[in-house]
View 1: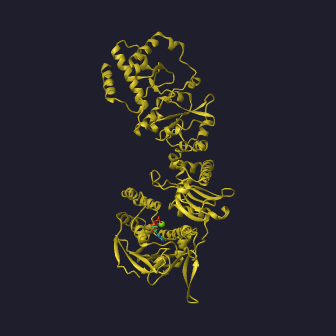
View 2: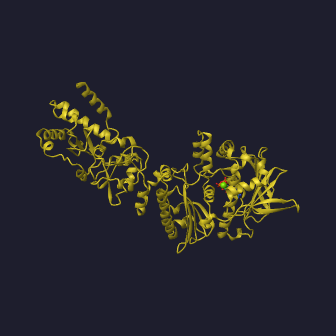
View 3: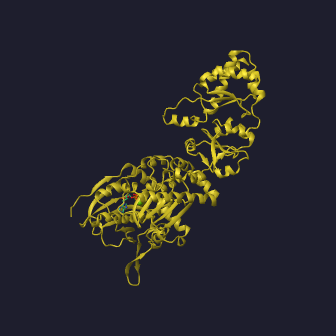
Length: 625
Ligand code: ADP
Ligand code: MG
């Protein structure tokens, strides 16, 4: 044997931090360490199966299994697998550092959280191997990589306090054996019934047999008893699977502690043969807005585990969906590169998108309350759909929820179907307004006419809304119309047209001419309106020009924006306008007109290019009072 002295290494600082956090905050749910260790053992067996497809020398005839034994006198719990094992290099990388990207920012985000929230977040993050230190004062890992033909393996040893040792040891069998020296107060984990219970609870669906060593008092011998069913859940007949089993499988798959809202399990035969099991989580994952968020399905080919997080099967806007896909058509040696340019992948993706959207549609029809809670969590993600997936535009549009002028709450509850069924007789379009905030949309002067006529308007104030609305042209034959844009068809809805009296009266004609002269090319045009009730004037975008909200999005993204010119509309019935009309002092008149335009621009944009000028002008006019 290549005798090497014991070497001592220090844990990466993130590992120390994680260990500390875990030992102190996950104590109330400590039994999960067993779930984590069994899940690692099962992953290692899956990896071996997968690797030996391309490297047949790794293959051996051993039946894959995970074995648990208890040694009461030494107070140890041993978990042994015959999976891929680890080399010296592997073990330093895997058990001394945390490779997952985003871990640093995750740990940072935990720093100032309360304990119960920490618990939830750490659970979601997947605590992994280090959770063994919640119950152990010392952990030994004896391992040998599957390709290693010698009798030599590696021993890793640590008490979870900053350092670990590595030595070479004799190990005949491949795979990994983990020995936990339990802390004094953790005697319960030395009881066979307790271990069986935990395995049943968390690991029943592990596809590898999990066995426990039992002492037969009568014959004075030991034997192995299988604890779990060891059959992949998704292969089983739907009718034979209980809700509880689906839920536990979800938790195992995702590390999420909450139950999923709903799921969809399908066996599909024919040219594309596959099984899919898709889940909708109750809560968004902590990193759903991170660019390197690892979403995607767990991929199997003909029951063989291939990889986690394969993103090729679902579009970005469905990144909250978790689950597995087991294809019978993909080759076993499939890699991420092959997946990306593969027609089978494309076909599966199409089918899975349809299934996902159908699952959501079903949820929205069957359980409004659950759908609403889904929408509150993931609506913003789903709103990326219209831009990303034009093929399913209608299905997606049907799943969107909005708030509206009549709704009287900022919660987004109204579907387009509902909006259409509540439309007035003469109404032909779906009206909406986009703004920076709910309050700003709700109080926009553009709504005055609609309020008066009892026509509902969708209020959109999420950042993504303006972008989304670019892709939503119509729904069930009804066109979408922004009410801050010029819309000639509105005239049909307004009975009292601005006609004869006001338009032709000499006073008003002169007034409009004067206003146009003062504002010059600051505005596109000036005209009268009867859309307003409370407000003296308003600005509108031309129907084919960039909207105010879109211009804001461009500016925020650092893109150049053409100068926006508005149509300036004046409400001749408003008291202030009537008063200004009669002013004889030209200088004061001019100041008033400029103030009115700034007011309208302020209401539309939520800011002004030169607020100081606006304030100075207002103060000047106050003094005149
Ligand atoms: P995760 O399983 O999410 O990767 P863990 O902390 O549970 O994180 O495990 C860290 C890594 O250690 C695993 O990714 C794997 O490479 C390695 N590992 C853990 N347990 C085993 C095992 N029983 N056999 C082989 N490798 C293992
Ligand atoms: Mg793990």
